[in-house]
Amino acid sequence: MQKGKRNLISDVPGVLVGHCTLSGGDVQTGVTAILPHSGDIYHEKCPAASHIINGYGKSTGLVQIDELGNIETPLILTNTLGVGDAFAACVRYMTERNPGIGRDEGTVNPVILECNDSFLNDIRGMHVKQEYVFKALEDVSDEFELGAVGAGRGMTCYGLKGGIGSASRILEAAGREYTLGALVLTNFGALQDLTVYGQYIGRKLAGVEDEPKGSCIMVIATDAPVSPRQLHRIAKRAQSGLARTGGITSGGSGEIVVAFSTANRMKTAKPVWHPSLLNDDLLTPLFRAAIETVEESIIRSMLEAETVTGRDGNKRVSLAEMIKGI
Image 1 (tube, rainbow, N blue to C red):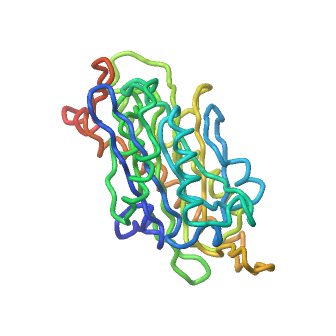
Image 2: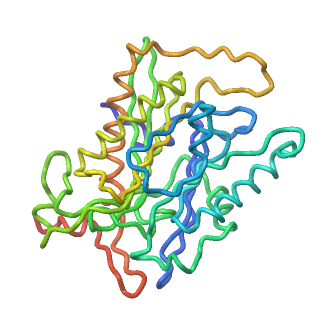
Image 3: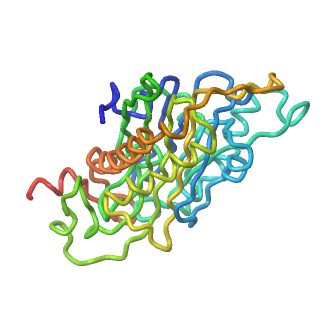
């Protein structure tokens, strides 16, 4: 399919991404923030859905997404033991902008998504602080780095260096052009399973077989007018993109997908909401776009990450460096 202008999730109008990266010695971690739109997201909520491929994870906010079908905060990605500080920071970020939260309005549902970066990062040191979440939120832009940055700094993918990846596609439905983009945080797999566009690259690189393990967070955004139910259908297609790269969703992995639309924002001041929705018969291009963007995002997370040495001298080599000799 046709790629977006930047080939990033931020090709979906209004979506912004920012990072805060911590890289020094045993500390190899960070925060990545995704802003669905730059307006008042608490009062103009985005239709959303989540899909749990395998639930070995510690993310927050997913229960309310599934119950109410919307998101009302930025999406924050970080390491597993940084979820608490990220949650608190997101609450602070939202209450500073919305004085009614917890008073004459309800509370707020922070969406925090995580992977375990403990091979390269001293995760026990709890190095992700609230200030770093704020820095990532201050850094948001439609142009952002990929690879070993932000939440992806300490991640491992297919036994090599993982991290942040993204891609986008342009599609047509009902006579109009729409954009769908994905952003992934990759921390899963065994090298022998790595497949790049149908080529079994991992088999050529692997010395011995290893057990697949780890997690992958996949965030899908679109400006197509779709409902939470339809977004759940789109989110389920992320597994096909993951599988194309060789992912098998092992028992100890957390493959979690969140999908949202920037169209049909739910304005809380209006008692009745009249969304215009695509017919279900027109969703196939969105399904294909979700598969393609997740697949490409995973590969880009590895190709655009540099080799990193972290905790106790542990090292993960960049895929770009590994494939030079094959």
